[in-house]
Length: 203
Image 1 (cartoon, one colour):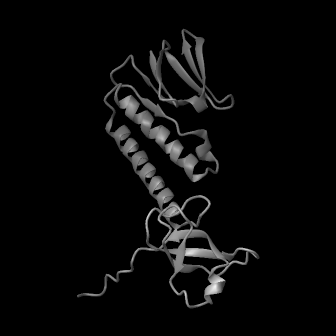
Image 2 (cartoon, helix red, strand yellow):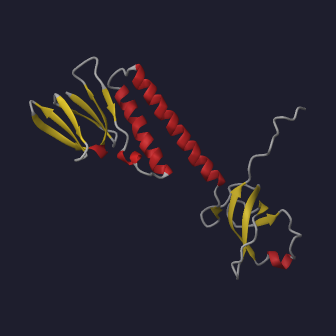
Image 3 (cartoon, one colour):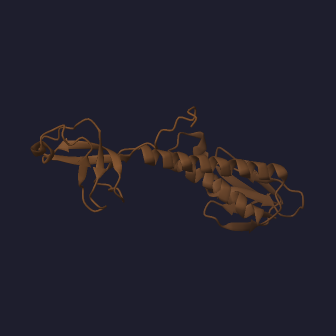
């Protein structure tokens, strides 16, 4: 008897005495008395455990996309499948020390990937058409002329729109005549880096 954990989070039992993993067909085959009793696409399987024995092995398969180039979101989804699979299998049996080590490694990888996604979000240019800042603060901004679409060099500006309107006050508003600011519009913004602190300076 085998218990299979699927990528949709469900688990199912199959009465079989052997499992084969046939890569060319991308199928996991369950065999009982020399007869194939079930075929499941490898893309739908996280892992399986042989539930007839106390000391059995657990097989965790990374998503096949892991062999190819993935986007960051796909990599996060892939690792989350593996972590979720381990958690579901832990409810079925007491996992070994090696399995616990592997599960913790995948949890760490998942955390790193999620942190990388958060850092990318914090450092990318955000179009004002996508969203505006939630609170007043200084931001690095990109302004363009409304009519010509000529883009200025990025500058620091104070967001004063209250989260609803695209209103900014440039830090050096004396750089250009007031009339010129009236034909400019902010098209993108990004949070400023955290305040620099030199750890070598002793107070």
